[in-house]
Image 1 (tube, rainbow, N blue to C red):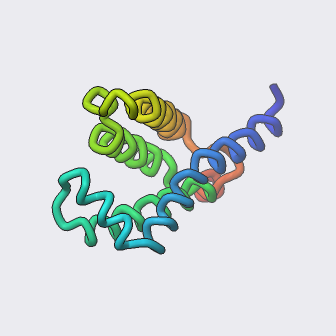
Image 2: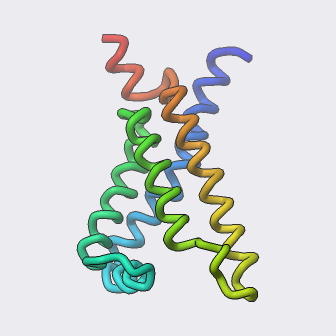
Amino acid sequence: MNESYKSYVSVLGRLLLALMFILSGFGKLTDIQGTAGFIASGGLPAPAVLAVVVGLFELLGGLTLVVGFQVRWAGLALALFTVAASVVFHAYWGAPAEQKFVTQLLFMKNMSVAGGMLLVSALGAGPLSVDARLQSR
């Protein structure tokens, strides 16, 4: 495969992975009350504060992926966050029978996203990124 192909595909991959985090973070920040209620349902403390912190984390983490800035750290942080959030909010093993299939599907989707984030963390942003630009200076 030629380098141009790899460059553009890595940008597309980062964008598609980031989209989930950007939309989720934006949604959390525009509905703090609803997000806080959902966080409270998971038994976590200070749900309103966590709603803002998590919303900003997801939004900013997603944006760093899009532009390719510090993606090794962002990928690792987003992978760990995704696994933790999945264990708390998509615990299919304890879900009622009628919710088990969808909850397991969401959990497994998130494990796949975490895997993608770990790949980004391991491989870096690629040549079309702020990281590559900073490294070439």
